[in-house]
Image (cartoon, rainbow, N blue to C red; front, side, top):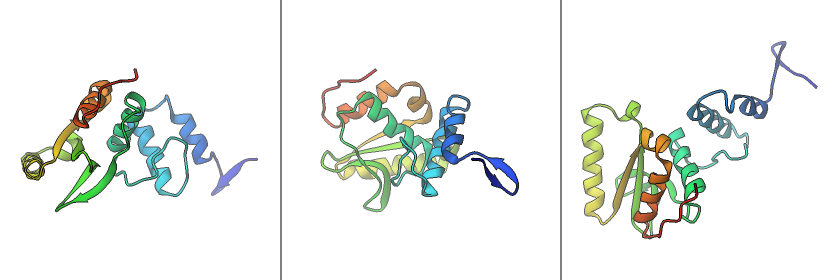
Length: 157
C-alpha cells in the first residue's frame, strides 16, 4: 500500500529514519528521531523525555553503551535558579553538554563558568563535556561520569 500526500508518494517516518541511518551524520539522525518523538511518534531507541538537543541524546546513548551500570540521571531539571542538563541528585553530580554553536562568545562562556562556581559552592560536582568529546571520546566521557558518581569503571567497548 502506498501513502500519498498532495498526490506525492511518501514513506512513513519510521521508514525514512531507517533509510537515513548510515547515510547522514549521526547527529542529524538523532535530531530526526528526536523531532519524530516530539510529534508523538514512538521510535525504538529515541528518547521520549525532556531532552533539548541531540547532544543530550548522544550523552545518554554513551552511558547506555559504555557504562550501563550507571543509573539514569534526571534530565533538564531546575536546581535552584539554574536548569541543568543532567543531575544525579543523591551523588550531587551535574553534567552539562555544550556545543560551540550555542555556547560561543564571551557572555555564554563566562555565564557557564559562573554557574559552575555557584553549583560547586552548593556542594555539587559539575562535569562539562563538549560535542567533540561526546563524538570522539565516548569511553572517556563515560569513565569520567562513573568516577564522578564514585563508581568503579567497568566500561563496555
